Length: 266
Image (cartoon, rainbow, N blue to C red; front, side):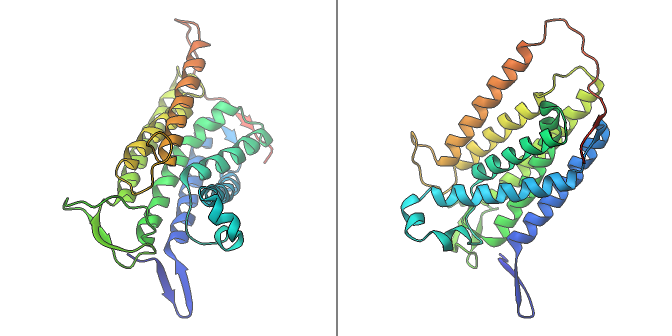
């Protein structure tokens, strides 16, 4: 693996490079979704702010998973380049998106629908950073031919293990493709606003829950890892929200396509 790229005296973390690539790709995808929906807003600014909030949330959630260690020596842990929790990143980014959507005067559910494919693709690309860094996001030992070892990783192992970041990259890119196609169909109608976001919550929750079954994370809540418990919460919330959205639509009601122009605040 390649945790760092050395350029003269400067060592550049490959994880950071992939996070930057993930944010850039997500911004391009979101801008394309805004354009096809007729939404006037700056996707690059939105992704930049939401991305920073997500990184902060991911770091804070990670260190608070071990509160005794954190409060014993908080500052080095807060500003370490390693250790980020997916669910904390989701919460931080989601909170920022809610604020940004409101500021740009975009209807909430349509805004979250537009953000969903970009969020899935961005997560997928970011996971390649975990693979390059060898930061311990890999799985249990395996004899499968595609098993990988990380002797030079940030969290090294000489065993051949499941390359779970690769699994997540594939799964989340497939989810991003599926959600984008859902958006295409939604613009042709009929689709209730919010359905794409609900599918994002459900599908990513299922994918992460399954990946965690072969991850090395410790089990805590009802025999599940923290990420699995968060995944269950994501699935349930997405399912309940989807049910409520569909329940508000009378049977047989014909809906017009969702392409409506919104002028954001910038």
